[in-house]
Length: 257
Ligand SMILES: O=C(O)CCC(=O)C(=O)O
Image (cartoon, rainbow, N blue to C red; front, top):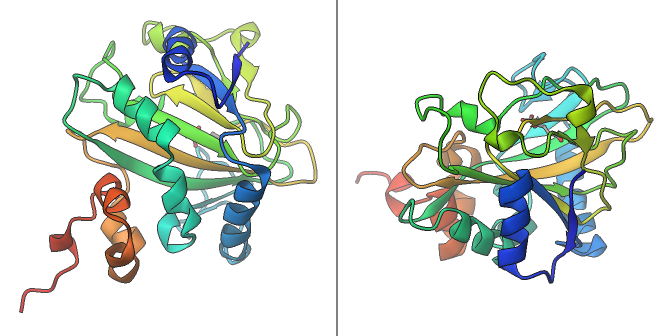
């Protein structure tokens, strides 16, 4: 089982559960209204791409054949800047990585829409994206998957294997060790980069939409090149905190005269 805590729970307590289980649900991280605003901003961009598409890059068995994934989220919604700078998320990430890095960066932000008929994703560890940091490793990635629609067992709530962030690499989960991050719109699954998880199967006609944000120690390279995906015009207008988190340093968009 995953523990569900309210967003007013002291940070230490949330981190203690995250450390024990590798994942925790924070209820009402955003209000339903805030979640709707993000969804409303993203909706036309989702409508513009085909199923089985990761920013137009084409079908992928791993990402799913009934999925739509979008990046460059700051360019698609100004509310995304408020999400990534959410004091609870930033506070938890900083505390989780305390003593291990000088600062934190967003590795990638990803809108993950699972459509009707999507099958369960291959279970994996996100931190394996940096395989040269061999396991067992200290926490390097702290992720949030914010529910922009309800996440139910039927519509593809994320499958999680609590405790697996501490398992040896070879151990595979039994079905009985899996659970799902069932949660209301506005709630978020927070999880460690080493916990085994994956998107669930969607057996409903509705689309399940999650907004992923991954906070990474600053000494590793983010998966997303935020300069490219955000674009100079939006990047320059972002707040200093958003620019810092996305690594949008001024020299990335200035043209040599
Ligand atoms: O859609 C989800 O709930 C999780 C997807 C995921 O884990 C991934 O694509 O890496």
